[in-house]
Image 1 (cartoon, rainbow, N blue to C red):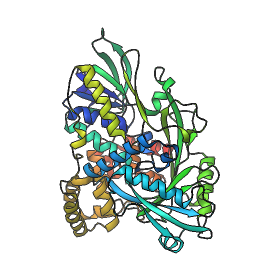
Image 2 (image 1 turned 45 degrees about the vertical axis):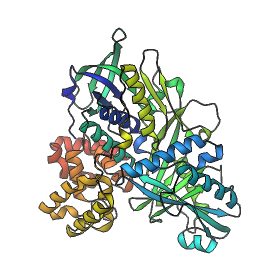
Image 3 (image 1 turned 90 degrees about the horizontal axis):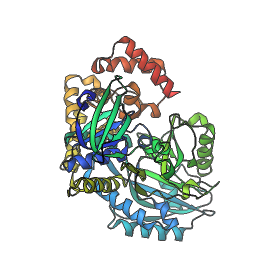
Image 4 (image 1 turned 120 degrees about the horizontal axis):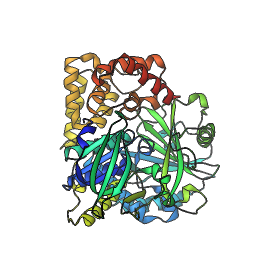
Length: 522
């Protein structure tokens, strides 16, 4: 993946996609697979906002059954099944357990009925068996961290997990392989309509301070939170903030779905990169879109929500990392953001520009296909969607066989078991290139942080091949190190100096990147 802003100058495209999150990435990928000439631009880094601040889940949304949103759940479950098939390295099964206590808001019978409907909407269970019931003793043995004083039992069911930023990145790579021009740190400054026959767009290179003029027959905004402050689209949007915390490891291969006793909201406790991901909050947001922060009240809310369930309570001192993100939803007058539908819609502005509003990471592929269907209609083309039947760019053909072979090879190269699992998930069949680097330099099998399953060979490969512009891109989205560990200036300098030659950074640039990254960490 090479960034080339200069190649855009004077080009004409069928489609300009503005916004490099999950919806923009899927739209560009789908359109390029159909043979359209596509350009996608992102004013920051790929997945630098909402799409790297999710709960890292590919799921149907069990809680939406309470509001009888069967259509949304069915749609998401269908997409979950598809993603498990076409991206088996990057989307993997994860079972969730739901404890039932004497004072639980939802009874065991209600939960049982809900999970029967969930399995039915999903079709044949992708993890056998489907939902299961455990009595008090069985559930306590599975989750010894939970206080079992008033526990009555619990149920488990299947969903799936991913690394959200990696998902976006692989789609961008796929779009490029299919012929799309993809440039991060590229801002749309101005568009003008050309007598109803397309648009002229002025683009600003945020990394090099140059400008390019391009022409596009159609424009789609997949700008997420930025749509909420754009004059044309703000009237369609409602924004809520979600916060997640990273806490010490307590779970291995199963997650927990819990209910906050304060307000009845559902939240998750999920294993992720060897730690525990706790989230999320859901509060209306009207603040600065460029400065979304984790506030003390957010941390207190999540700790207060989880601690009644635990034998040993967590305090703020246990929080290893955190992140905040914004969800854009369809405009609604409902009082609580949690009650607003997560479904998606496509709007058309007076100038003919299309706007993607709302949606979920799980169902983004299907929604993007609808966007491209509409674009093809406007262009007078009749080209069927190809993303449903295409393996992801880095997906191996025979995943199970490949996983066994690559795991054995990783062991020979000195990579520990946990780091092996994550590097295979993160890079898919490209891992063969990383293994060749390790053959030349075996020391690269060392972990970057001893407690985390991420190795130096991965770091250097990302720096060299994944369109990294800034140190923060590398340490927050290519590898999620900045939310999994605490880094001081010495740590950042050590990493920056390791990748400086690959990224062509001189000593002044290294110091600038450290300072910028330090500011973002704080």
